[in-house]
Length: 300
Image (cartoon, rainbow, N blue to C red):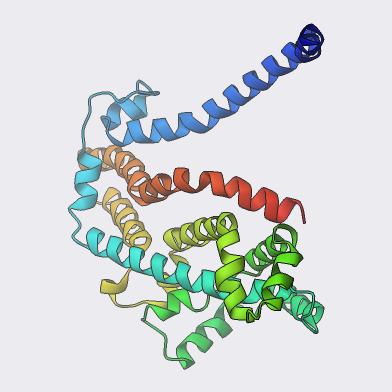
């Protein structure tokens, strides 16, 4: 029996070739993903002349932190960081609450008219009032130049509602909800004590989706904010790049050459400064990302 089992589990030549091809392709894809990241990190701390001449292609050369010095010389950077953290935390919290409150009822079989409600939600994915009506609405609501202008208009994503609703339908057994109802549990008690503890994967995925969107957002701030003390990090970094480009177009030829060289280093440093928190967050949520999407969406 042991020999027979060993014969069954023994890999054939075709299995080994297939496995080798898989590992080779995965290694190539991994290198394609890692190399740009390593290059940007190295370029942000390398001499700009070495980067522009092509001598630096992976590891940093003639290390210098001039790019980071020029960025953090701007006192508004720290304030922008704090504002972005506030907008991301508050906005993500509102997003999660609104998405859960919309997805849970739509996942219930006993909700009357849920197909009509879902059709109205989906309609908004394809048609909207446009930028000018949105601005007028925010202005009439008195939210201009406030934090609410950045978190209320984007309070919920219909696509994320569909993903979470599908997760509730496919991954939470109906029998559990029926048992909770028989025990006298109300809908809110069922949601808080039964559904959400079983939905940590999809909650982690939604947290990642919404937080990354808020962290990288700058367009709404550009439209709705006029007080510089409320500017998020992305808008501050955008101004630094624009200001640096303006400086390149003024001054002597030597000064312009230096500005062009430093501009490349500053751009690489800006990429690292803007994306480092997200890069640090993602590994902790990656396992939930696979569970939440694969179980909650693909099965649906």
